[in-house]
Structures are given as structure tokens and as C-alpha cells.
Image (cartoon, rainbow, N blue to C red; front, top):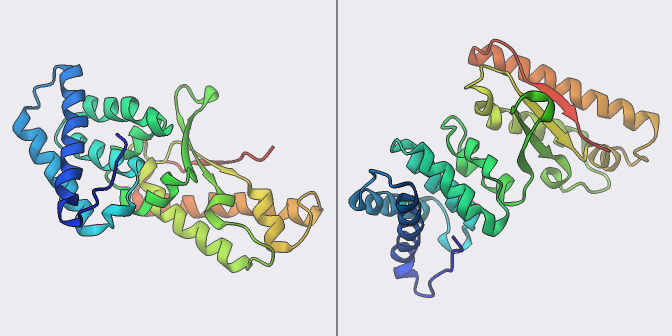
Length: 236
């Protein structure tokens, strides 16, 4: 799916629905799914209407459309089709098939994660040590767009908001999982105006991890998790 915007705004939703129908129909045929043509058309129209109502269709990227369409398929009981759609069509924009896990997690707002996904500030990795367990990686440099003189308060507020937004990723496992944080050192260095190798920065990096662990424990109590995700600092 490579979405090309129609020049006539009045035809935008119709063109978008047509592209979605084409992609879903391709997956339906490949899987020999019982999902019939009428259902495909209804799903495509619904996704296109959602985009037109809640987003600027001219600025909606392929990745976001794939996730929306995959979630609609999952909601219609077509999990395999949702996974297949991202695996096949996501290759065009290098959207990992692992993002299907996000698409089928209703507790996480796709609209709220749109920028994170399109910028790859949020990405899933499969942990070799976790027996197929996903590690959800937040690239803090992309999230914060680190600049000299960054206010410390901004970092903590951003982390809290992100953890609340993404908490649903661990609902299915009742808190079992891993949050990875990358480029923490560059964000801390920009925030403090110090070299990332200085001890004050190293202490602050450790504090970022402790802060996330603590906040996830609190979120876990609120959501009834059995445990809380571990937090890994992935800076080299």
C-alpha cells in the first residue's frame, strides 16, 4: 500500500477506500478467507471515513493506514488477515511485521501512536533471551528531539505521558514484558548540557530507568497486572 493523495479533495475518501479495498482483497484471496467482498467494501469504507473524520487525509502516511486497516480486520475476527496485511504491505515502507501486535492491541490508541510509529520512535524487537517475547523500544532522541538547554521537567512529563499511552501493550501478558529505551544518553546530555560520559549524566540515565520502572509498577497496580515490565537501557 503506497497511498497517493487524490488532487480532488471531494474524491479523497473514495480513492482511499478503493486503495484499502484492493489491499484487503489481495490478502483475502491469498488466505482463501471467508471474509466476503461485501465485508471488504464495508471495512474499507469505515476506515476511510474514520481517517476523513479524525485526520487530515492528505497527511496520513502508509504505515498509519496499514495499522488502522489491520485493526479493523482484527476487530472483524480476521487476525490472520491483519497480520498478513502488515507482513506483505509493510515491506514497502519497512514496517516490521511485528507491528501487528500493536494493531491488535485495542487498549492502545493508534491515533495516539501515529507519530511514534511513522517516525519509528516506537518499534518492536523480538528478544533472543525472551523466547519470542517482544521488546517495545522507545527512541527518546526521536521522541524528544533533543536540543541543548532542554528542561528536565519536560523529559519526565513526556516519559509519564508515553508510559500511560503505551501501557496497553502489556495488558495481554498482565505486565510481563520489556520496555527498551534508546538514545537516553543523548537526551540526558542535552538536558544537562554536559558530556554523556560524565558521571552526572550516567547517574541521570540510571534515574531515567528507575523512574520508568516505578511508573510502570504504579500503572500495573491500576491495571491489575501480576507484574510490571522490565526496562532496558539500549544505548551502546
